[in-house]
Length: 464
Image: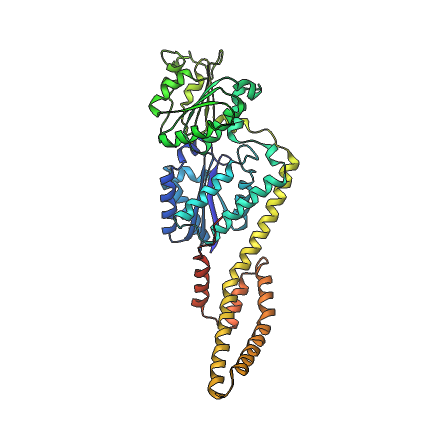
């Protein structure tokens, strides 16, 4: 079996396609289950964020795997295969490992170096484990990706090369002004209470806003976020939870609104925003009376971090409204990060990819080695039993000495070959050594498979 990745991201597809192809949580689960049901795939994991959708699988056929995974992505995203295909990228084996490790380090993010992706990789692994679609390979891969990402952030200055999308988005809203000075004393509305919205609320609180209202479809999650924001010894911000039905009214009081929900439709229409700032209607762009973007004094700043979008793009053309969304962030993120830090992270990624490949190749032969030693132990047991029949007068001490001697002989004979075969198997092209070992010692393939299954079903495997 071999690792295959098929996906699309902000680097390969326009935001309009990413927006349409975004996967809700229940759709991700169905995609994983259908991928596992497909003939070429034995394991599957999906990494779906605001700017990427990637499907990882352990497949036995490359071309059939690419075709099947591409078709499944199209079916579950709702974007036709013919339209989606030009934007898909395919990575196989070490290239797929390299890609995920680069993603984990923030090298492939819209804002290079941002750390939010580590939480999203952890969520992807957790979903695969919960649905039992992530087996030994993908458990090992995603666990190692998390370790590589943490190593990059702790050993390099990649954090200085970029920021989270939230911080970057607020910087764009501040439009060249100091973010803290711009935000100080303002009233904010945060729509959603997931990881990105929680990060936005915390960032706004640190930036010095005076008040934060949190609205979420599930009120309990909004209450929990507010409880965290209001903890003693915190930033001093006044936070309160409101119902989603109150969002329109809250918008009339807000200076800043951040939205990041999993809604499939618009959360804030242009008409809602217009009403909040006192406009009677939204001018028709075709009339020529509405500019391509807002003019005049800023009355409301909107940050849309959702995919698909939560806020109508037309709201950004209303007089006095400044809107920053995923699309505008992608356009603004072209500034080159610190080259030395990026080069250092790339070196880490290359080293970790080589180490992961060697470990996987070595692990591939382990069941064969275990099966060989199991067979040898069986031969020793049979011979000792035969000896008991021929020499029934041996006392316990004599029998134990003979048994130990035979075992030592077998262990010494097997030691050098098994150590060497593990070394050879860890090198590129070493996969054939397991086959050679099985052939030379006439090992039962079912015994080897049973060892592999026992390792895969170990409850302590793949857990962080």
